Length: 258
Ligand SMILES: Nc1ncnc2c1ncn2[C@@H]1O[C@H](COP(=O)(O)OP(=O)(O)OP(=O)(O)O)[C@@H](O)[C@H]1O
Image (cartoon, rainbow, N blue to C red; front, top):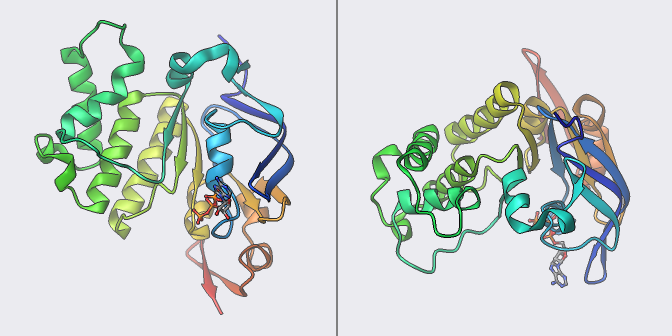
């Protein structure tokens, strides 16, 4: 069995327009690890995540999935190794919730294959996991923002890639569903050895649900390390350019804006 990391970024430099997102970024993510990406609006978190997903090229450097580059893998093999939750979900056509979830199985099917009963079982299990089991025949265009976000997560779970790249997975979710989704990916990491990289705007949840944090400062600088070292009031006040105070209750940390 390959012991190569799920993903490895080597000397990665990324820019968009005139904006430098990161310079000389190096990291590896092993099975079962969770990494949070944090930074101000416009810092370049989504841009970096789309580079990690192989959807736009870095300026320099390389990304390897299980030791293999995107160029060598090609789109189908890449889709079997990493799933990407994008920030916006457009539904140009009417489709049911179940049909949309089943699109997650496409990388697993041959060119002329239809989805099997087993594929439908996998999709239904994912819909149950995000609390949408009762809605499988609903038209996606009628879903609320939070329901649509949970459907995107169910589709990603149906894809069942070992690495999840999540761009703001908590967008549109109420507090109850935020924790449910973070618990879902914590379980995937713990029980199935999934790797998770997620863009989050809530440092307290990153502290609780991730092992490491990558801080993107928006001027090309980044910092990477264990959450307990990275997610301090001092670091986060500098990152968000707003003074924050850390509060600890029952072993959990919160950050209060001053
Ligand atoms: N095609 C483009 N041309 C020029 N600038 C762009 C382009 N795409 C994005 N940008 C800019 O690059 C910067 C980084 O965008 P990105 O979406 O990666 O930020 P982000 O950190 O994910 O922000 P947010 O927290 O608001 O989602 C932003 O200032 C954005 O306006």
